[in-house]
Length: 268
Image (cartoon, rainbow, N blue to C red; front, side, top):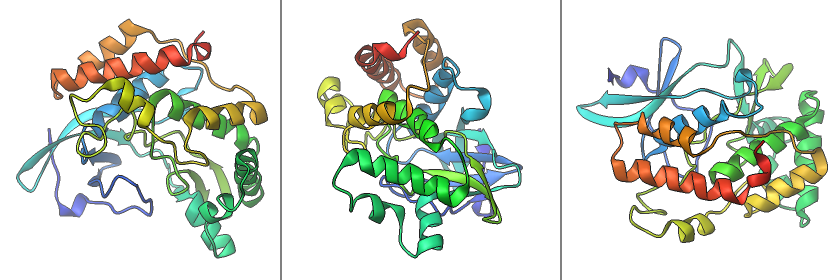
């Protein structure tokens, strides 16, 4: 457990549809407290399962569990090392507003055809940043989101790294805390039917369908990520999260295995 204070609180220029999660930074380590349910567990489990993928370790942020004491309250949550290394994180929404005076979300949702929405997102980002093969990067992100039901990937939650808005590079995949039905406060209460809740989750990047987003990205940019985890790997990772109740841990295992069956082709 770590005790954190007001001086450690960090406010970010990234918006979430899930509210204002407490975030802290101390000595190059970021901490996030659970806000709607078990976001910390989602970050931890998803990052550990990404190690069973074709992603390199530089392509995603690794999260560990942490209990956070703040103002006399103890929160479950997670922590990760600062991955910016002297660069600044800038969301695509903010980048577009600074460059054009209007946001990316406004641009893509004026386009009725969803394939064209993703093409516009990729082409304009590449033009602004000089980053090549941004489409392959988007395919990886959208695949991770589909496999783990991350419902909070919108233009305020897609970002690149910049140095003084002159140089840009890809950010590692991060912020998966809205995955695996982690919002038990409002949208996905404990005890509700898993299958129905899985079917009710909606994506937010450029379509409401995770599968449609992933399919479009594969058609445009190819299949760029594969996975190799099975039940025992998920079970071992989740069993380590003893700060969460058995009911929550069992649900996370069930959700992941249900989605894994739907996307069997993604596995070696």
